[in-house]
Length: 636
Image 1 (cartoon, rainbow, N blue to C red):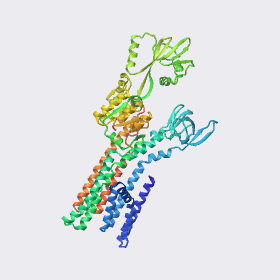
Image 2: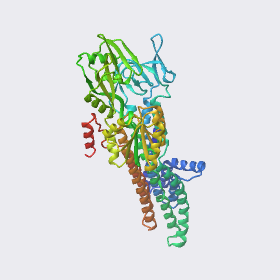
Image 3: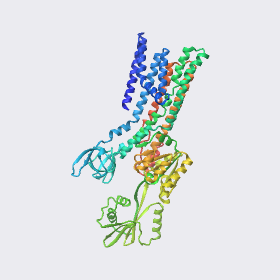
Image 4: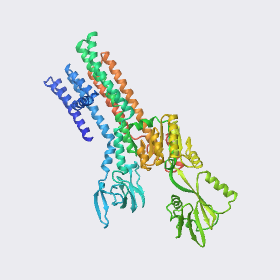
């Protein structure tokens, strides 16, 4: 791609040099000015002419490249060598600019390819390290990642702690702390201490490899608008090719222009009627938008996804792992007896369980030193232990205690809020409880508020019970919700939303969301979710950041505005130039400048998609106050 851009720029510079030489020779009344102009046309136009002939030969279709070559040759045949050379130069310049745009828009994928590790340090059975190609690594192999080195493949940390730079995958600049059992991804950088990592994916299945594949595929998939413009070009160009000789003949026979003037006007028509700017209206801008999205951690599988996103009327969200963190936290802790060592006892018991609720309880009491205990874990019952002559149990059973009216009311209220209750029993008598809740993400309320302000219907689909769904929906301000949904019921709901609102989206992260993601007009997957969800989705948020969903929607809308501007502008210029030609005051040089200048302006306008969006970096850091602050910042 870079080599192609350099070649285009060399052709453009050579064309300019020969054209300046021709002008100089002509002004000094020296011979061979036509030769210099001819060399300018040859240097600047050979590539486009060859591509036009090749497409005519292989696909039996005409394109704008061939139109421009014919226009330049036509200008030369009637003695307008300078105009032919200038047309070739500006057309070559616009082509080089488009090559640059394409190269610029694919720079992120090139950077990703450069970051892709090729070797790894594999730990052998005798404790020695062996350098091997990444492709030679097998599942369950152990590798060592040194400080400052790229992690070569996806795996799980089995020894060491370190900070890892995951910006290449997520778009986030802050490093992520990795501890024992955490997942690490190929292509990220180990910034801290050496790590021992167990290989969990082959080199072809890593998240890094999938990102490269997705971006490469996305750049091959044109948007709906670009496809429509390409279809128009295939019809429009032959019409121009027929209209030009027909105009020359008719104007020669039925006007007082004569053949010379009619032929000149035909060449002007050939130049100004060519849809170069129209053809360049969508593709460069779309490639730039896909590149921009990749840079902020959003993968779009083609321009069609951005087209659909810009016209969104309704959006549905899965709850767990999408609108909520997917990890419960302790929100309430109440004890009915005064036992100073009770928190230490709880931590001592929960530290011997790997259950997600146990992890949440340990996190709640993270500064509490545990008591060393012998603990038994029974499915459906919980944890039991003997301590100071008493039988202690922690689980979902409340024991045989008789609740007073106040306690009963309090527990029922917690249940109605969708909270999970964990009871602490001593000798089968209730002595306290813990309430846990999967809380909404910090950015969920901001995201829902954004779409609601645009008049886009928001819906939450969840398999959780009514109480939990109602609490989350109320807290984040979503328009509607459906609870107790099975995967097929989610799919049915998405079909209904699609029928009612025509263009809808589904945001999810789990295997159970995959049918709904595939059914929606636009499927959006959370990048830390399941591979199945990412495979069927049209857009992937590489980091579970709903604010990136806002950024990508703004990006899609900006792309649509730019494409519309380009189309209206290019068509207006073509019509104005054609009208000016028939009124006889448009010269070939002005026609060349007007037509090719409009093409350059359209491409430059498309390049604006590479500029970061305003407000793109604002992020809330706490749950309540900063969400309100972020919302206020949206209106600044």
